[in-house]
Length: 113
Ligand code: HEC
Ligand code: HEC
Ligand code: HEC
Ligand code: HEC
Image (tube, rainbow, N blue to C red; front, side, top):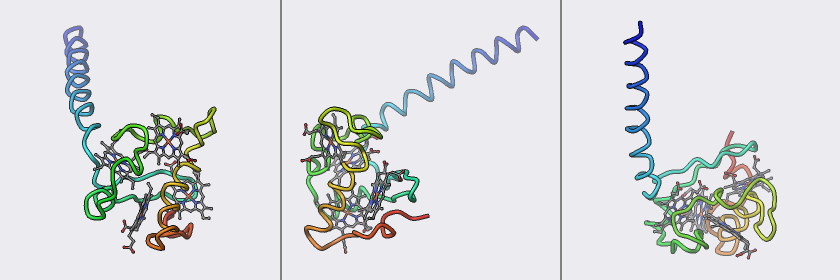
């Protein structure tokens, strides 16, 4: 039994190392499609279509640091100057769609249940 326990402990260490490694690398890769969770209905965001096909500049959305998730800084509630995540997304996403009369602006067209 003792050696089985040691085996499990060793396996956990191996899984931790193997699990943690690739995740760190993948975090830097541009996602294809991102699901942005919301109670109102999750929003499916095609990163590839926006960044590659539509050639929208990275810093149009990643206004502070390209490739960092918005939620790293924008939280559920406003913090100092940093607007809450809902307003950050609505302003960036809906803002462009409205301004250019292209892309969804109705709640249901982004939030799907
Ligand atoms: C139209 C807006 C938009 C454009 C343009 C855009 N991104 Fe993103 N990007 C996002 C959103 C939204 C996420 C998901 C962030 C989140 O989960 O909070 C994201 C996620 C990422 C991630 C993964 C971050 C993580 O921590 O998981 C990387 C890397 C990234 N983008 C790189 C780029 C690069 C490089 C470009 C330009 C070629 C680019 N993005 C253009 C909106 C955009
Ligand atoms: C490194 C931290 C950080 C990251 C990552 C970040 N933001 Fe912000 N954001 C801020 C801060 C701080 C402000 C407050 C105003 C300023 O300093 O520009 C802000 C302000 C904003 C505003 C309001 C700008 C205005 O003129 O009213 C929008 C919209 C916004 N962010 C959208 C986003 C989106 C969308 C993402 C992800 C693609 C994102 N932010 C990622 C820190 C961040
Ligand atoms: C700078 C402009 C711009 C920004 C910023 C932007 N979009 Fe878009 N979006 C577009 C355009 C252009 C289309 C294509 C509309 C068409 O083909 O009719 C589009 C289409 C879409 C669609 C329809 C499905 C698709 O991709 O074809 C969704 C959903 C969408 N956008 C969500 C978002 C979300 C969520 C964000 C913020 C993270 C965002 N958009 C930011 C310009 C933008
Ligand atoms: C262009 C796409 C788009 C449109 C249009 C849009 N939203 Fe959103 N909304 C988002 C995104 C993206 C988020 C951020 C999800 C996250 O935090 O990951 C969000 C977040 C929210 C949130 C807070 C998160 C939650 O759990 O519910 C609420 C509430 C919300 N939206 C309501 C609305 C309403 C009401 C409308 C119509 C008046 C609307 N949205 C239109 C994209 C959109």
